[in-house]
Image (cartoon, rainbow, N blue to C red):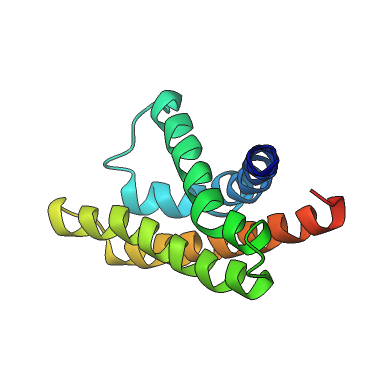
Length: 137
């Protein structure tokens, strides 16, 4: 039964995360990234690595944050705090590595992306937690 709950949480997390992130990627950030990272951007997006990232990230946030908060009974505050920490750690790994190793990787992109990742993970964790409560998963 716990396995089924986790599968449902993964599915919910996928939908919620995708909706939030698509708003960011389509409506909010395109000009910002083009202005600051245009020199690094490909003509066409390679979707395979993006999909792999989404799958890994969603399984990770479900196993380490949303599952313990909901299935483990740790509550919404766990989803809030650990969702933020998960986003901070994961997005910092990417952005700070780029800032340290790539020429002309802008600090403002690093800071904005880490802030977005922290918010995205927090919003996703809280949203999925409460969806699971409402649905009686």
